[in-house]
Length: 417
Image (cartoon, rainbow, N blue to C red; front, side, top):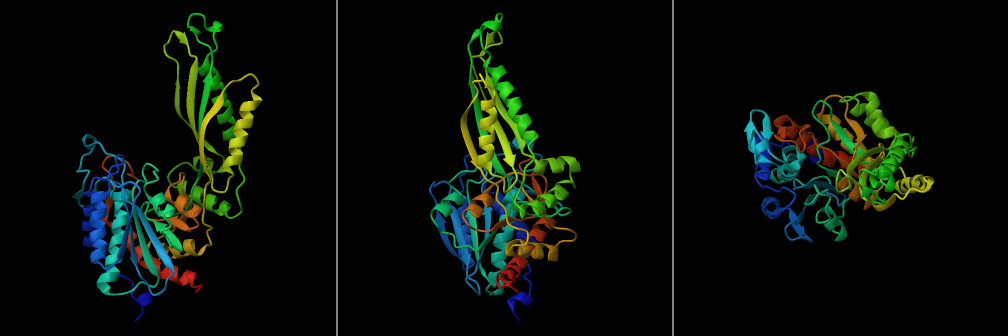
């Protein structure tokens, strides 16, 4: 009987134990020290017979590659980050380093995303225990520094040119059991720092000065109004992704709000600073804007639009002091990876599995930009980064069951079957 005819079974209690083993390591970032958890994963995967390699630029934030050779060299990569956001124990009702209450597993990282990492490790264990080779080679990347978008994590592996993956599934939580989804796209970002310098004066004689905050505020209002009215055009393959994204987010929010996430840029005024005292005309002011654009939109062209809008205000002195930007990425809905992941998920889950865009961007963007087709999938809860973060036993089991289906589904699609 071939491996395709015998779906792997991943025991529930093994999943729970491995999740708690991972959560017991405090990998809050900052500082993001992952040495102990990587030691534990390396020992575990080596004992299972996987080939391992450490790659690091920051010795406190190592990354681990583990490889399980398959029946063919075509390689499916599972990637998961080991760092978590920090936690304040005073805000928690349960142990942030792991506590089970009935069906719920509490702890920082249970849903984002040590539960997904546990499912990956138990997938490798299931093949080892069954003494079976997967239909394709499986590679696992356990990375650091994701929560702060640092370069010590996945970017270090990419810079070292150590990945040979044909496609990747990242274990980020992409939806609860009652609304599962596969993330096949992300948004581009345009982060702007705007500054203005005016002329100081006494607050009782404001007409003798030039208020930098006033000028900056006028420019911010202009940019926000133009962006919020800007109807965007996306490449043809992206349009169905955005429509499915609107359907997905429409299950948890007003449909008009969901549509507004994708038919125009979103813009958030994140910080604004200026002035020294209430009775002084401020000489200097600065602000930071966070603009997000759907996949396929030319972020650099949007930046030029913003520059032009600022130039239209003759006599204004507001300038762009700093900028960072990225272009949104996507996988076409009919691509082999999306098709394989959808098939694996629908074989396990009841109801519709949405193929949607994320509203932000992370390691998937890095991998797609490096030429590795990438999606995100894991069942989780809506407690990401929250106090009393938790996952459920059913969510873990469902994620693991989908991962167990993926190697075969992937092999079939990449063989053209």
